[in-house]
Amino acid sequence: MLDVQLLRARLDFVAERLATRGMTLDVTAFQALEDERKTRQTRTQELQARRNALSKQVGQLKGKGEDASAVLAEVAGIGDELKANEVALAELLEGFNAFIAGLPNLPHDSVPVGRSEEDNVEVSRWGTPASFDFEVRDHVDIGTRLGGLDFETAVKISGARFTLMKGGLARLHRALAQFMLNTHTDEHGYTELYTPYMVNAASMYGTGQLPKFEEELFSVPKADGSKFYLIPTAEVPVTNIVRDEIVPLDSLPLKFVCHTPCFRSEAGSYGKDTRGMIRQHQFDKVELVRIEQPEKAWDALEELTGHAEAILQKLELPYRKIVLCTGDMGFGAAKTYDLEVWLPAQNTYREISSCSCFESFQARRMQARFKNAQGKNEVLATLNGSGLAVGRTLVAVLENYQQADGSVRVPAALQAYMGGITVLQPAN
RNA sequence: GGAAAGGUGGCAGAGUGGUCGAAUGCGCCGGACUCGAAAUCCGGUGUACGUUUAGGCGUACCGUGAGUUCGAAUCUCACCCUUUCCGCCA
Image (cartoon, rainbow, N blue to C red; front, side, top):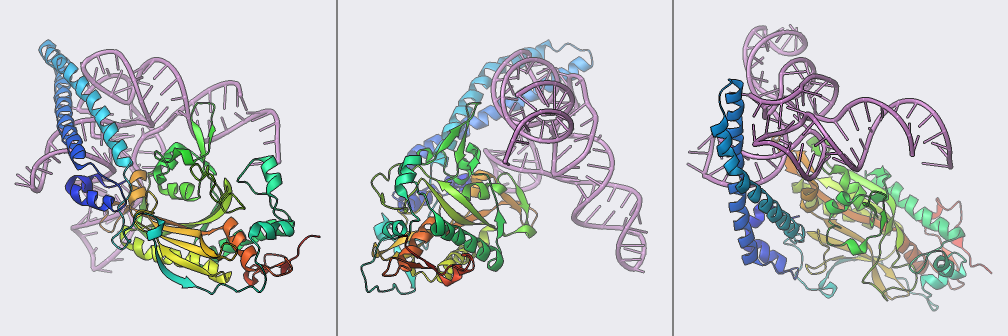
């Protein structure tokens, strides 16, 4: 969430920055709410201080065996007003906090202003899309002919937006994840993690999925009436490692890589990407997460994005890097780069990684702090990015490495993970 | 799943209704002593929020929530979690 102090001190500035995201902040309403909060809180604390002082007197008098009835009478007179103020303040603060928790992050100055994905800006391209001297097939056709992709059975087992992979294809999928993990740990210095796939509401709140985006999550009810949420990305369990922590300066930065399944309801995307495994309820992703000092966060975003790009380069998959405009960014992001991989069958670039800097937006909600050089507690900065989405990378490999006879070459970087298989051959 | 014990500051650990935000020890920071270090001694050392030009002042927090009371770490209720033993289990 945003810094309350910033809201109080520079309300107009905040409103202006939020406006670039297409978000109207009702400055007058906020100011009114804030004024009321201030009066109410001051009054409540005054009354509490008075009550505490008088109660202390009662103790002293009784200790000396003196009569305390006069003081008791006075403190009794405070009771009703105090109670009323406490209740009113609690309600007010609840509303106030809910309001602030509902505000998205402010975009960084370098983020292009725009309304939708139409206004995103391409930063760079890498690689040249191959030209095929035959009619390219999409990954569904390729995978089916390889006998490795079976959507019909997945539908029988679960329903739409699930995939069943078999044989060499399942292995290729596993190889991709292994390759990504090894690269990030061995070459980029990230620490590998294994985390829970179901988390509590506090964790979802910490990274910003709650309270606003509950409908995008799957959940599992518990006997006590609460629920577990299935993680929509490893960002959630990994970033929440530092929730309510004060980490020492010399342990920073924390660089984590984590391979997990991700579960998304995809509510609101009905009819979108219904064919194939582009948009699934369950998909694997290798996620990079960094916990940084705020002043190093922006360099870290460039570096992290580079680490995700390295995977695409090693796989020799053409891609482009774009910067999301203000209107297309996620709720908590201050800046986001998307990496889009070339998909020949769609004749276009499709998102395969999203790398974001959240500044202190998530850390503030999570009370994730570090001891700075002056020994003061300071809120951390968090970043994350896909490195990469495994399912979509598989799609990209199938489509970019396809051959006229329906076979698919195994990228050189993956061959060591494939037990010597260099080509996936179609089934008969 | 059954039984028992227990959740207090960075850690250990006192505290069973009133100057308790909390003894003491350890750790950490500063200082003294020392050529330097160790030992010793002295002082300091939680978090969040509000308010204040400043120094400060105030409020809340002893697992969580509710309750009793003028006053709760301490009493009551509910819940959560941890540990140990037993059972079951990949």
